[in-house]
Image (tube, rainbow over all chains, first blue to last red; front, side, top):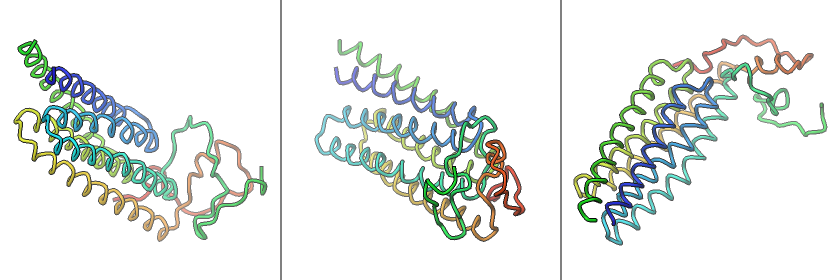
Length: 121
Length: 127
């Protein structure tokens, strides 16, 4: 039974990792690639760690695995946010069919200042 | 039931290694090809996640659960690397004075605030 649960968890995790890899390969710009790699990648990797914890059938290992997954889930958005912000401010171009950029013309990167919503449009 | 579970686990492990390998190949492609430095950092971050996945599957295969410690240490180091590299991209952008996304501004017809700073599309923060 444990083997069955572990197998299912590993399969789901590997599928998510594969989807994230394909997203990293196929998507057109940094921001979309980051979306694929961060979310699907973290979920896949967390599920595989959980599978290892379930397979061990020991409380210590399971708790340690839970701590690891918690750490991953905490750090992934922080890293992605920092990276996305840095890429945006460095002027990495967006995909030509991106619908909108809410920050365009409102953020002064020299002074690190964001204008209020009422100022222009 | 026991034998079935065993067989299924072996099958799942084989499939998982195959999937991870394909994802690894795609990520290495992005790491080599990625037009901007930020793409490479994203690929590096995901490479770390794939490494954690490999280690977790390896822990199941070998029933040696100390490997999980390695995975967690790897997650920590990978997070710090991502933070440091994005900080580096940001500082470099500040020094060279590049502007965020004029290309999209033009697409949205933001006339009147077209700042005229030299900017190289596709190379924001080159390595």
